[in-house]
Length: 244
Image (cartoon, rainbow, N blue to C red; front, side, top):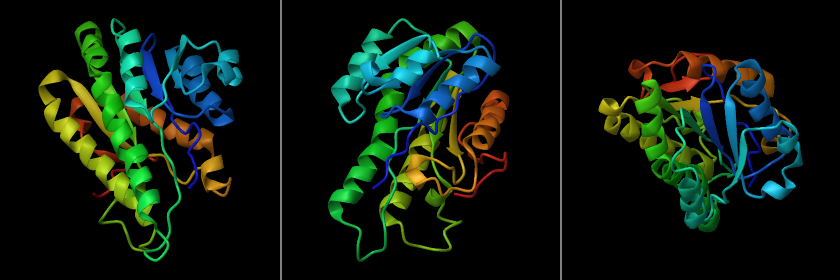
């Protein structure tokens, strides 16, 4: 299984505060934090498993580095407690692992791990930081959650099969986002499912078809322009709606 490293892209209005939920640090994470910080003037709180080793993120002078091991629910809760008075206008859940093969090679252990990381962890992160999102709603009128999903989680778009361990958890994540959107209608929290494209990252062994910059630009535009009417939708990074 391959770990996604820093595909999360942040964007939005000036002086917003964002949390990037991501297990792993590295060059791709550095890009994730740089773009909103420089192009949009955002205050970025980067969540990493080991702040001491996140040297490249430190170079970006993010607002704050917060330790979160998303494989440990207690770590998520502790980080939320640390930031309990901080309004968060945008929470992007990007922790993820890839991989997975055909029906004959997919193991129970691999599939369960992918469900945990790709579906359960975003749910736990969203729930833990929901009070912070509500603080942002009170302060600024709305807040946004971006779940980094995948087109491979689309049931209607599945014409090639396989990848059981990756597809199924992404489909589950889309349902998590759909329920969040339904539950948050009156709370002015916009919930988006986002397909970043097949991006050139370590997760794809750098064999992707989309550069991180292209993916960032597309997702940035979607998030920055999202309205309550978009909550619950599934977006391709090119701005189109994907089928469920």
